[in-house]
Length: 397
Image (tube, rainbow, N blue to C red; front, side):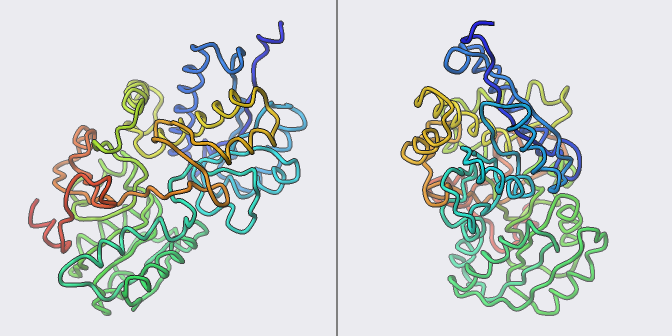
């Protein structure tokens, strides 16, 4: 095979089975669409691209061995990061030892302590990721009348919730809101009534939740059936971004305020993103993945756009050259222009807060165009107004 026809091999792992499989499978389809797109345009540096991809099964202890195999046995041209902190963090020691260029997908504050100069994060939380994820919730609360003055923090007892809760405490203090209750629950929890009973006793104005998929569903159901009505509820819930969770909960989500990274609203329609989602959605049903892909797909595709642009600009796979270029340049992507700053995070945060409004029934189409998840923060991306307090959003059903 001629040198120019030898495939460029990009290696990584994804949690294609296990508790993170849903989001990882969406990322895989987005990566495949990118690979098909780049190869249709002649590949990278005139060579076709292929992936060497392994399933880490959501097991962090399997990740170092996978990257060692990719580098030493498969001898891939490039390595990239898989999805989330659980996969990225255990890959970092080997990546750092080998001085590899490494663009990760999401993962919150992965490089906070390591400060590895060749790491780049495809997540719009910016240079202070812990606080950026949660600031919009507290900033919104501080703009309301009457002004909320107290907050209860409720989170899963899990690694992913540690940084958001730290950020929530920082932001509560920043906006003059007192933490009057803090509790964690095991991920195995099924009955959340006792959790909410304890919050209700405090009469807290705000209920900040940091939860994950199944427990997000359980918490939403519990909040709606409980007599306690906080003025705002939500914040850092993983789950309501996923189409299956939206359709499962339906109108029970109305009034909840939560973070998003992208939403189908006019101010987020960056060049190429709608075409990408059209392609993804046409294939999602058959692939058995999230039907809309709003949460994972723009970021996963953008991850590969950054890698491709750095390779084309530097003319090869030298890790130091790729890293230097990525530190110094902006990248046009389907998430808009991305520039990296401190610790490889985005130089400016772009985290959205959305409020679910007007959901009726459980049909997926109502979530297609952003009319049911209203961007209420930041103002430059907003698509509507916050309904406050939470009880008001329920009377509009």
